[in-house]
Structure formats: C-alpha cells, structure tokens
Image (cartoon, rainbow, N blue to C red; front, side, top):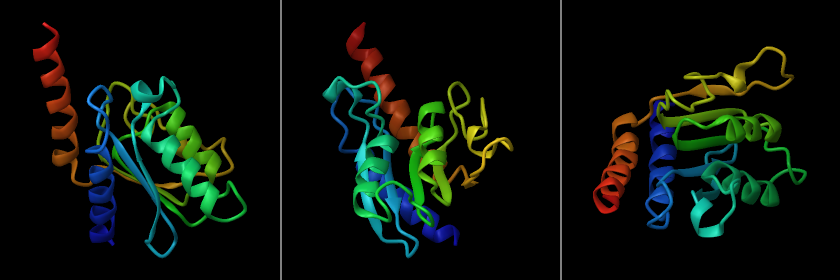
Length: 155
C-alpha cells in the first residue's frame, strides 16, 4: 500500500512543479477509490489573487465536479506534497475523503498532526485516515529551494 501512496505523492509533486514562479510549489491530487487520478492542482494563490487557491482546495473542487454526488468524495484519497493547513484540512474533512496522504510535515502551520490535528478531532463526524511523511525529503526540498531562491532574489 505504501507504494501506492508514494505514487500519489509523486503525482502531487508533478503538480507542484507547475506552480507559477510566485506561488509556493505545493501540489495536490485526488484519487478515486481505485487509485485513478480524478484531479490535480498546484498552489495558485498569487496567480489567481485568491487566498483560498491552495492546491488542496483546487484539486478537491475539480474532483467534486467529476465524482459522486457533486461534493462527497467518499473513498477517495487526497495526496499533497506538504501537510495541509487548517483551511485545507477542514476542506478534506468536509469533502469526506477517506484519507489524506502527504509528504513534508509543516510544524508551523500543519493541521494534520503537527501544530493542529483538525482531521482527527473526535468532535467531528468524519475523520479521514492520515499518512504523513511520504517522500518527505523530496517534498520538503522543493519548498525549501523555492524560499531560498526567493530570499536570494529579494535581498
């Protein structure tokens, strides 16, 4: 099963690499219960001027348009290169995905086990399975390189 998670995170990495030069390169894909990719996206907050245009939200929106009853993604997997923030963790819960798989942990803003654990809060009626640290080094390196390059060009 771990190989399937690696494949999903690799697909999310491919999406991350399509982010515009001003957007943090984070990618997400949504897979159907059979492991087929329904949707994928990269962060587009800067490009779209939209504070909700995180890769996870964009991918969940696209997948919901293709799958199920229009918004429930039961049985699906959300794979992301970086641990989702509170907004994206909430979107994963509300979309009813079966699992969230991600690469790099995000101790400053992560909401799937690091800083918060939104998706496994016992007060919620839906709690997806969580698998973190998949291809962690590759995922972290992509984001670290982005910030290093931006620091170099900004000053």
